[in-house]
Image 1: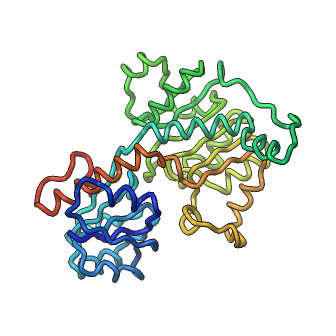
Image 2: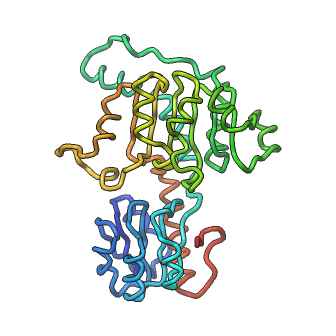
Image 3: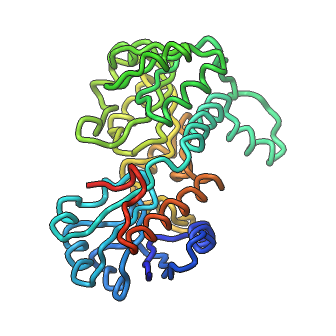
Length: 331
């Protein structure tokens, strides 16, 4: 089975090419899948895409014309896929729902530790033989209150790590698990209470209509002054303009992001020799209390192995007319 793989990096090629299904003929492309590039899927039975590919109605219509019957997302998110259009074209869409919740949760806490203790700034100073400690004061996590928004697999692991630091953990989720919370010493509360009591807020929810701009001017105003916000989930959970205003006023004391509202065309690429055209991202990067990584929370050997395993197994099953792995089909 021939599969066109888009927006690939060396680590994608290495893990997919060495997956256990040698009967898959991978055709790797560095560029993204879109209506403009879809012709490169000619002769392929399936395409494998990532979070910034533009799999809209025109793209899906052309894929159908080319005989493509499967879009395999090598990610948990699929909000860049027009599911209604895929259904109308008879195209199946699948994803990797839980490649490594530990990877993302650990990265979130790593960002928090780095931002709080100014480790990134200290690293740069020492490399320049500047051993001054001025401006590097942080705070103990022990005894602080963290609000975990979303207690799926990633949110639960993040909450448990925070409990290990001796933190008080508040949680919000429309679907509460009282048994888990009691076992882990976590307290479920309503979202306004979480916002008002948390020293740190970490986001672990999917991007849905009701979670779009969950962090905005109204909710920022409900937070404790000087709050730290961590987001390793989806960029559009945060209204960037409101975030900037919160940082300027001091209402927000620090921000650690692995995702960004308009990361398409910026994240995953090297723009070091160019002028950054995104004014809001450039503004965020100018704040000393903002830490940004380029959507790398998933990037561990374990996660990449699981992405390759689930993706290749679903492609194999689809080719043989078998049911896809449980929980991976969407739409």
